[in-house]
Amino acid sequence: MSVQARNNVVIKGKGPLTLVFAHGFGCDQNMWRLVEPTFAEHYRTVLFDMVGCGNSDVSAYDIDKYSTLAGYADDIVEIIQEFGEGPVVFIGHSVGAMAGAMVARRSPGLIGAHAMVGPSPCYITDTDYPGGFTRDDIDALLATLESNYLGWSSAMAPSIMGNPEHPELGVELTNSFCQTDPDIAKRFARVTFLTDSRADVRELREPVLVIQSSDDFIAPKAVGQYLTEAITDCRMVVIENEGHCPHLSQPAACIDAIQTFLTQTCGRLHA
View (cartoon, rainbow, N blue to C red):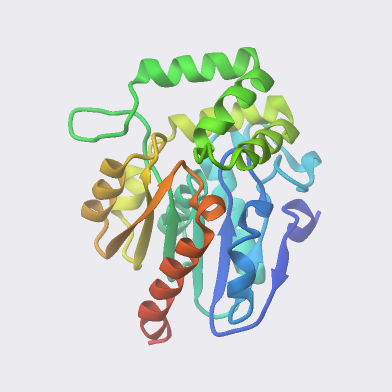
């Protein structure tokens, strides 16, 4: 099976950089439709669906491989090696951003810079880290999800999206969640909410942009601040937005933040 068919890879545009867009839990590449086209006018863009999501080849899903984030990271390495041209900027949402951090640690030099939208390296708070949830919170969330995935999706997606003045966005995220095979989604949820990527982000040496919503209960501002302190070369842009998906609810602000970051880092990537 080809990498392109496995991950439903779509390549657009042409330019000095390759921008690889990675979606988050319960989503697919369509979640970038309000952001990616602007960049395809000036750069090569690569969109893909993680295996088990969107229009990926579900027959490629292997329970053992995808029981950890490493399985998804290995796929991303292959995608970048096959479709990346020139310096690569990895643009990841939520757990997709952490997959990019893992790729950078496992394959140094493959990614030249990172733009992270709503990232969280660990959802569980401990004595020196403000993850935003207790382990009991996460266990309860996973138990509810595993017992009634469709019900959980209908209840949680609007809260994750936020922006109640635009209920159509919550409906879209609900539909995206519900289109994913429930068994795969349940396993991916455990990967998403139980992975601790703090060691990966601390090893990042590439320029990093963190795009932080001003009100995001999934990845609160304290997590964004942690990343700016933990990563050697990191800047954070806070977007006035309620919810975890500013690339859907505030796409123009996301585009501006990413474009400014690219302008500031392009010269360094070509050096």
